[in-house]
Amino acid sequence: MKSVKCATYEGLDAKVVDVEVTLTKGLPSFTIIGANSNIEKSREKIKSALLSSEYKFPPKRVSALLAPSDLAKNGSQFDLGVALLIILSESKKDFSEWFVFGELGLDGSVKESYLIYPLILSLANQGLIKKAIVPKEALVKLSMIPNVAFYGVETLSEAAELLQNDAQLSPSLQTQESVYPHYEIAGQKYYYVKEYDEDFLDVKGQEVAKRAALISATGFHNMVLEGSPGCGKSMIASRLRYILPAMTTEEILDKAKIQALEAKEVEFAPRRGMTVTHCSATPASVLGGGSGSSAKIGDVSIANNGILFFDELPHFSKSILESLREPMQDNQIRISRVSQKSVYAANFLFIGAMNPCPCGNLLDEVKECRCNELDIQKYKNRLSEPFLDRVDLHVTMQNVRADDKASISSKEMHKAVLEANIFAKSRGQKSFNAKMSDAEVEQFCKLSIEAEAILEKATQNFALSFRSIKKVQKVARTIADLERSELIQKSHLLEALSYRKR
Image (cartoon, rainbow, N blue to C red; front, side, top):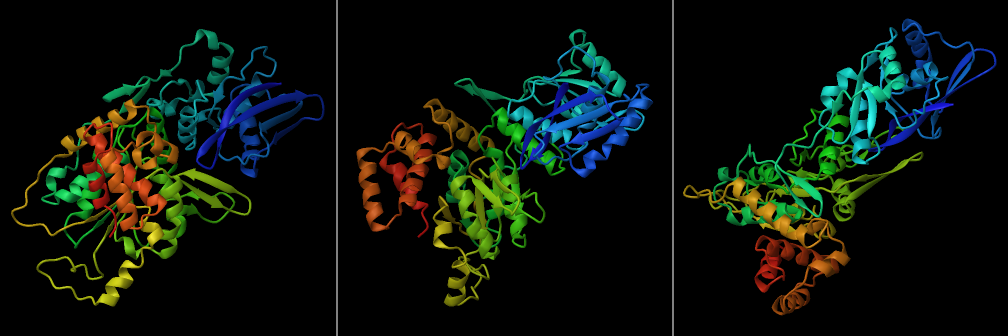
């Protein structure tokens, strides 16, 4: 029995599939075990490819197994592996370490499958793949995936010759390290981009909001911006992605995998993504799910390691806002179906924008608000206390004045974010401040004597919950990191408390 490796998708991650083929005596037949009906139909295609490539289909009982057989499989990437094992069934070589991906044409050509790219991205991110045979036309797309040797082939015959003489051949493509600037801490490299297509210099005034944006970006703290239409809420949100912390190779590959699955143009630039969700979106599109046995990812998973932006926050349905509480707290989303239960990563930075009232003019110094108190209260009551308790920074924005000026650029803010994160990583901290566990809070959020007294008084005066206390400590830790302070001082804690929802 001969075997090679391939892969299929289960949820968001690729799962390794062992492709095995045996030839036994008996009436000639060809069976693929552990495959769905579409994959089983590829038998005729494989036969035709073998004959077109001047290989004889063996007059034996041919059995191919895609193991584990109880794992649901899809895609045409298994064709090449099965055909190669039939051709090389009598070879004495062991091919079990090879990954083989490719769809076969009837003439024996090896074609690119749309699933190959995200599958290999996922396998590389998990450290499961070292060398692979792939369609030659896929090499350009695969060129940015690090630490994998790719052997490109155009025909079935070429692939068979490659496996038989693998010791004499060099990879068609050996990927190299990213060329983007980076810093290294404890053996881990963090990459970033120095280009700013949208700059905070375009935002006039709003010093408090820009300071909150800097804190939010540094520690990955959830933030809600409240202000009149046109005061700059969306401008600040759209510029936030350009000053976010540097990315590891794993995070870059994970972002590329999501882009490939969503059929978007894949970029390997170490810049975190931004997912903008409209208030008319359905729960399935935001949270994931859908009909059928396979649950699809939603915006909360697409935004993993990046920003999830909700504009007109109170206009989202109550069910969506309440369902967001789980991923905002646990950084993952659970989707349950009768035949499948899936858990997807949802480690996003939540940014919400809202008006102060239904008409939007409550805080406007010129326009008159047309809403009565009952309308305003109903509008704000759409956001429950448990939901708001998961937001670290609440910012009330003022109207922009004609004499307001820009005070800080995205380049300056990004530099401050990077330096603060280097400071945090250097003390052995793995996660962002907002994502720290309770144990990490105890370890890294050390308060001065004055800060401890302030926190104790605030807990009593504002009736802070246990979660709120931890969130205040995390925000204060980020403010201290921006000033490179080992201890959280009184001024850091007071500023953190100023961002609490009143």
